[in-house]
Length: 388
Figure 1: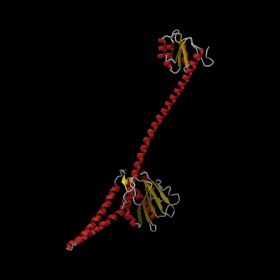
Figure 2: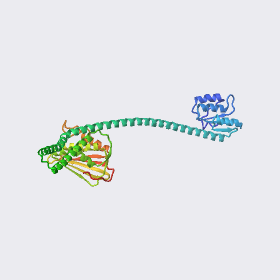
Figure 3: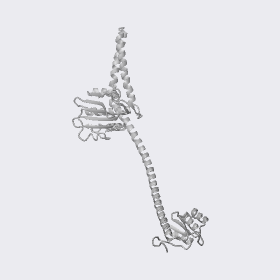
Figure 4: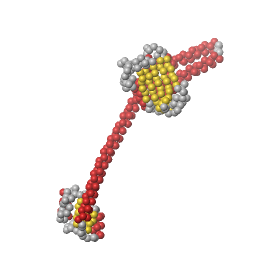
């Protein structure tokens, strides 16, 4: 028998026996058959095998050069080679080697296709999981945003409670002046001693005091309004000035010296004015607490710009922080105040607002040297008019 030293060879005397062998050996690499056999043609055998498993390489041997047989072998048997008898050993051996090589290559390709399919299935599963994770992340982000909005709203209410007395005093002063002017004018009219020039000056001053009250009330309404999260181009020093509408009286009552310096040509930023005002409010509240009872208490706010950033430095001359505390000061619920005196959320809210605006904030402090907060926010213009 030929080729047994190079290949494992199984033989059959007819098509039916060949099919039985193929059923017991489905991983055969190559099948070679005569075209004309008793009971079953070579084409019928190979087409039957092809329907069961198309992988084995199929070869037909025949002594007849019939075009119909060749066409059937190609179309139905899907043969690899059609070889006429008499065949040469060397020629057939080369064909068998090529056929086995093709079978192995086909098997390797099938294995790669299966691996690719497995990888695709894993990728699809990973994509589905990623979609679920993204949905979960978006849900958590929305929940976080809702919690932040609630915290900001609560912080605004707490701030309004803190400054209620100062606001009342701020409004009471112009109201008292207007009341005095009205009483004096009524008295002068009754006595017929009205000085029209003096009355005109007093009316102008009264109108100025009414504008002052209107400005305070208008800002209270704006500050107390639900935050939409909308961002606009704004001058940050103007936000500080708006904050002082509500806090200037408290600064006076606490005998705090407040100085604000602004470098010329400060850039605008993109921000939410209500949220950024809450930053200044929380920093002011924090400073009021640490400056309580301090000698010559002072707060200094400085606005500068550098490398496309608007930099705000907010400093006080309080007692400062113990070593290592500054690194923790923005953590939620961390507080240096006595139990019941603070929630530990004020500076955490500040940190959240600043980072949400694409900025950074750090606290520099040492015992006895006060606290210095440095806020850096991305600028969107080269410069803007200096806020009054």
